[in-house]
Image (cartoon, rainbow over all chains, first blue to last red):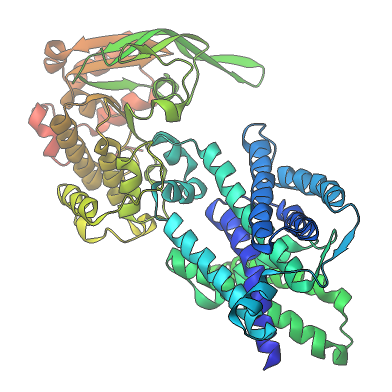
Length: 294
Length: 285
């Protein structure tokens, strides 16, 4: 039972990151790799502020803003300077690696004994830490999908969604799709950084290597959710991302706990994750060819 | 004057060669005027529309919209005055948004705030506008546009383009990709909406019969220049055969356009303004 709880808890915390990946990849159709830099950026900014004595909630807010600036930077590179989307993201990611080290002043920043949003909730509600962890993660993740659901129904939200779908039409109806890409990437990376800051408070440390493979984990969550729930509306799609994230974390936890029986170690995780994503990407094309042949 | 082009030139480099798409176009469009534009492939029709819409910046010359110089103004900044329908039905709307959401984007053109555009009242208004198309789309407000057929999408695109009351409507062979029945329908819808809004309209077509029947002025483009600019009276006296003869005189007789429309145009008798409703044979080979 505890493994399920742990999976849901981590799934919701990392689910915020997966929501960001969903926005860039699915809504904007923009393959944004800057998330590998903005996830640890959120952790670095959030952790540094907590060590400096800031309120943990305020630290989350600043982390979101920092991530948004990072995402907007990628957006400007891709639209104003016409750098390929993939390359723009990689450039931001590499710059952020150095920047994150500067922010923290060292590669690893422990938060043991420091206040966190989880601890504040436990104190405030007089509940055990395990419940507080779950309650905070759930309310932040559900709050995020509710806000996103509302946002995507506003004028600006419709324009964002149409940008990934048909940028020419967005332009013909009086909105610059370039501006929408910048805005959307800011929102996406804000969520990713928020997730990073939350993960740091949850895990009790920030590390400069925290971001490696973020994009693959995020994509895996998005794809797993889509395959299992086949969402038809935006709200469902956002929910499916969270569900996919929980399942992905659960799979990792199971692999780590029981995988040693088949010679599996933690260092094989990324290979396995990438293979899952690869399979999910290849499967539709393969199925199509089968149908075409039959 | 809704639109004025003064000495507009545009060339593209194709390989090492410089190809002139527009070679000095002067043109003016008055309020409420409906102009059909014909010309062979490569005559500069689409470039002309792109220059007016802002997608293409001319090498030389000026574009004025409502008396304002908009030559350097990007597409989305002049979109509030312009409605546009493309040839490809897929270009007109966002496929993964619903019919209602696409219409909402179109009717709140350029205004992108945090308000919810699909209030109950606006939904009712959109339903009514869709009912006017007579295609049953008013029952499909919540369906994704990807589920619509080409004809339905194009009818929706025409409605979207006219919904925010633009001053100028640009139609770029917008029935060319449709089957004959749907083409007629979309054309009839276009006429209705243009007439109801009193819109200044520029319609590019490759069908000479269409160009003669619709609108009150005809422009023929050839090699980036305006070859003919016929006012209403002269245009009405013209038949497809006359147009073909004019084409031949200008030395573009071997044109693909000429062959396809001369073969398939209906006999000359029904070529009166009301003939838009008469079904036509499909486009030739």
